[in-house]
Length: 162
Image (cartoon, rainbow, N blue to C red; front, side, top):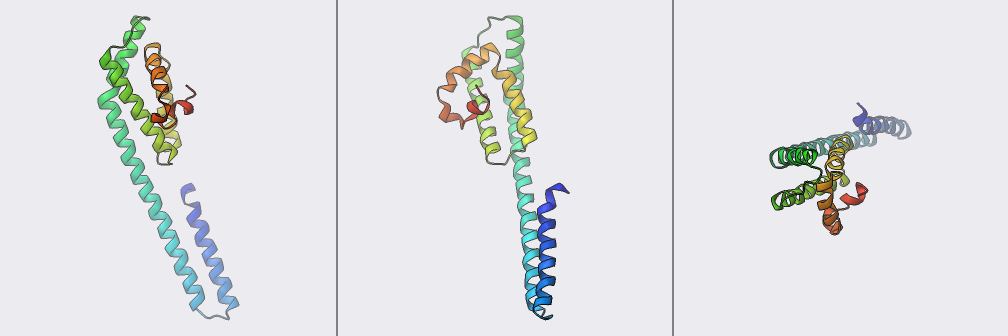
């Protein structure tokens, strides 16, 4: 219900305005009917807008999670495992390239979050994951190099305070 307070307020305001104009215009129905029609139209428009936003969020959420699961999850976990077994572990060239792709994915997620298309709770979970990986020594070295191209990452590094 919390997502529909704007629609409820519009409908209540429309009804009150229609009742007031009905009284003010001595019971002539044209003005109150026009006001009610406008209010109903605005309510439907806002509801449709919210539905479209939810659809876009779902599409982005699924696409980002699928890409992460298929391309990055296993490799990132393997890097973590290698680092836990060898504190001096360094990324190979393939891992570095994959990590740059992962940073690009993170930046794209952040861009859509800034545009209001990614829910704050979802972004918070993703951000925690980014912080976890980015703080690991072999990964943080690559992140430091990529930070020099901060314009390429839509402000992600500033958001993460890296």
